[in-house]
Amino acid sequence: MIAVLKPGVSGEQSAKLIEWFEEQGVKVHVSNGEFQTVLGLIGDTSRIDAELVESLDIIESVKRISEPYKKANRKFHPEDTIVEAGGVKFGGGNFAIIAGPCSVETPEQITYVAQRVKESGAAMLRGGAFKPRTSPYDFQGLHEKGIELLLEAKRQTGLPIVTEIMNAEHLPLFEEVDLIQVGARNMQNFELLKALGKTNKPILLKRGLANTLKEFLMSAEYIMAGGNENVILCERGIRSFDPATRNVLDLASVPLLHEMTHLPIVVDPSHATGIARLVEPMSLAAVAGGADGLIIEVHNDPQHAWSDGAQSLTPDQFDVVSKKVRKIQAALA
Image (cartoon, rainbow, N blue to C red):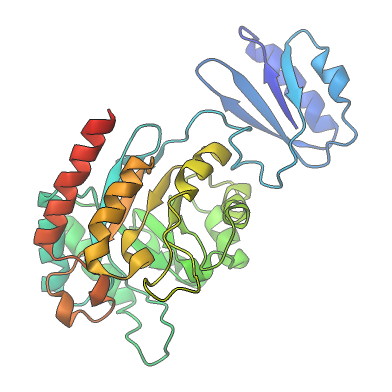
């Protein structure tokens, strides 16, 4: 249930109403917008008389919410949420590109790529230290050493860093990471999501391989229910019957999610397609479709990359994509 307050309601009146709601056994999520304040009631609201609440002088409207996700629901929070990670903002009209290699390999590799993507307009550096791989024989990442190399690249370039977590036990290693990524395979690792909900770190949550948008938002809800509302959603393609691309990039999810949630949405065209030459057109389409950002894989030598070289752009190719993205943004402005 949500209750929208009338303009001009005093803080004291609002506090008394919130106190009354809490006495009814529900939690209250307060969203203070520019033009209205929305009280989202979380819990068993069956005992609350909606008509009684709507009759109060300070109430503009009351509506029951059927969706199981509450905190992530745009009805609870009508205005876009802006999530800031390492000084970089996503959502609410803010757009940023995250770029870097699939895996951190060597000090020279990650620092060089960081310098090049920064020159081309990337706002954050991505790089995998812990790598979930389908085959147990594939490269699994440098782990703690990989994070150390990312932090060194950050010190040399100033770019905030993004890297993936696979286990809640690894959280102490992520204290200096600016944006923690939850990969597609862990989207429904609920114990990990609950642990991340207790942190104050911004989270980049990727959509699962075969998950609905509702399931996607329920995973975000796990993090937000723990108290951490700094969640960025990432559409990275879903599994299909067609092997022509690695996954099927569901760009329709971007405007649909904007209707369903107030959280920022970025798109990963690299993992979605698995083909480097498709990254540019899918990036441009994502921007035109309303994405709040992109996360693109860039490697200095894709042919010899330790993982996912086929979907990685060279720094020169990334520079071309970045410039075209800015043109699309200018055309939409």
